Length: 198
Picture 1: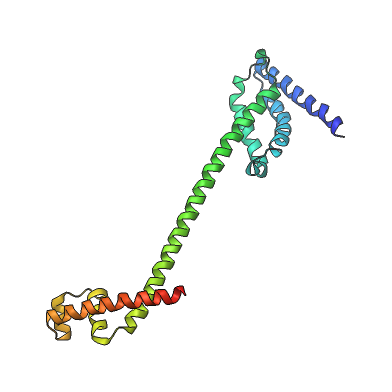
Picture 2 (picture 1 turned 90 degrees about the vertical axis):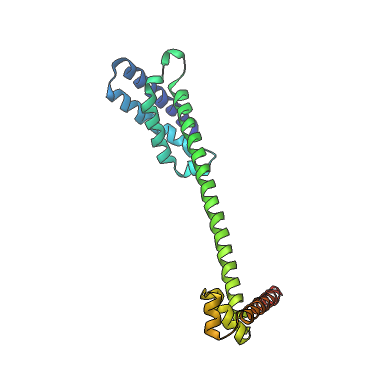
């Protein structure tokens, strides 16, 4: 059956070329339409056999794009040069497919970059959430005067004057408690981190 189909396919290419030659002589739209219709099926079979999966998966669309390019470039086909219509069409279709493969590869790279960036952001957000949870836990364990001073300075953004006024402390006492609280927090966070790693 394959052997019987092969001459029929060649006849279609040759018939398409006859229509193209007539189109070149008469500039008849009917001849051009007939040539492209005959060419379409042969190109579609060729595209469906392509090695690149996205090309095979989008064979119908790619064949349509190739036909549009053939229609745009038909003035470049010159039968006098001895090149067959089949060879010329296949060359044009290969150009379209190569262009699309490059576009697919660029799109794949762009998607991979977006996915990679998303992973990095997710990991950073997870790490940030993890550190915030450690900080909350450590802050809850911090003894009372230090905890209140650290919260006032770090979370509420109070100045030293406001902090000392609120707690009725001298600036030096408030600063000492604040420094002790931060040192204690660092130590607690390290311990909590080590405990989570185990």
